[in-house]
Image 1: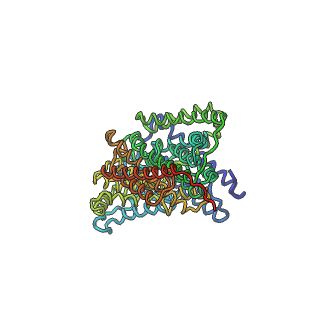
Image 2: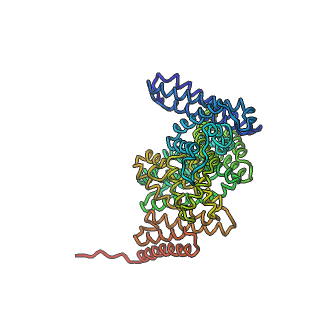
Image 3: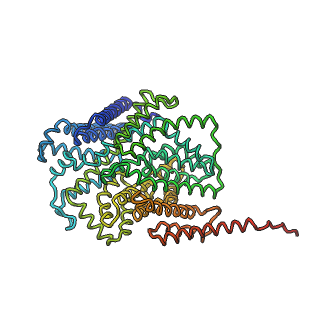
Length: 638
């Protein structure tokens, strides 16, 4: 790593990094030990995680910053204060747990002061990790809890005192230390550590090269490598921006070399990487919280997500194929036999642990146990992998990477826990449900459009997990009241929060890819939006036809699956303007209208859409055959 810090900060940086390593190793040891030998009460288990992850966020700020002089001194003061506050407030719960458990909700001034310190420190840590949006939303909910008597009638409540609000957030499992943080402590942490070990054993390089072997020879091969490789990598990373950074540095330059424009190459990588949070088996932290909220097994969520995710990537694959045909782009050369043999050997070391993980989850083992066993299999197999065998330093780095990846997620869901607590204690959830139902005028379609807009807007400023929690509390119950199956309602909210990574004007996935591609961020973002159009329509299908989420019988699955396939073909052709030849305006419109009709939840409309798409294809084939049959004209003399 390049040293970005001035010499006078070397000693400070060494101390900061040593603390990051020590806290990461100690935290990982604590959670893997308790996972195997039995966990402590929820309050202790979660407070340890919050205290250590808040400390890691503050220390990470000091580690990354290149500030000097007075700014560096001020920064270190904030960092030291934040770390001390994190350790003090979390440590108090661990040390005084018995008295807290016996207090029956009656807390003294000391507890209120410590609670206030923790909440303030948590909001500051979240600001450093994600910016101002999430802390400001949390502050708004805190103010609502305090001044409920002053709110309009439909939103009014008796109001909470500062002491009861802070203590309730700090010393119960109804606020900061609530269910969202519990999901991170019980499940997400283990998956992220497993993912960090996968990355350390060469997953990124191996998945990209495996994609090259599978699809690299096809026309526009590099773009298809991006689609397949990002799908494979994203299925275990669960992070759009991290996925862009990991695979985009390899795939985007390749796409540009064979002839794709920079903004299209960046858009393909951004869309492929954004699918990481909807692609099993990991799918990001929000999915574990979804399973907890719905009170279903994690395997149920995975099965529900499989077909929408496959359709998402099938659409992107078809778009890049049609674009390659339109531009007459070639594929890559074959890998030689030595490279192929080595790739197969490398793939075994990664695919076997993934198969173990996927299989155990489907066999209804707990996600935590499946992640731990899969990690053990990965480490054992790694001992026999000469190319990526990890020594002690590699093992330590993988653990540190995993825990520093957990840290921002933990503080985000802890802040979301404040919002959850306020919604529950004040009755805001029921009031907002009434307001949303009135606003939608009992129209499910109107409610879905409002929900889509809310998810995308919130997702622009919030991490996906926080966006999902807020909307799952407020809007999902309204959808369920209007007849939507609970899993479809929650997946709808989750999908659009995820797609905010490619939605203008704030599209972090697209902007990251644009930076690698050397393209305009907004142009890349709008191109991402265009080629991912079916993904924005997909959630409407599984709300109106939940069979696509494995809810119901095989017929209920096959009908929306066929409709989705038809719609993908139609939208891909209309988007690119090419299908076995250039499309004129009329045929392009036929593909577009046919696709939109196939997406509609009515069988007659579905049939009409299929016929329209078939007609658009038939017209093209007829014109092509007629052109081929025409004799070549002889040149005329003068």
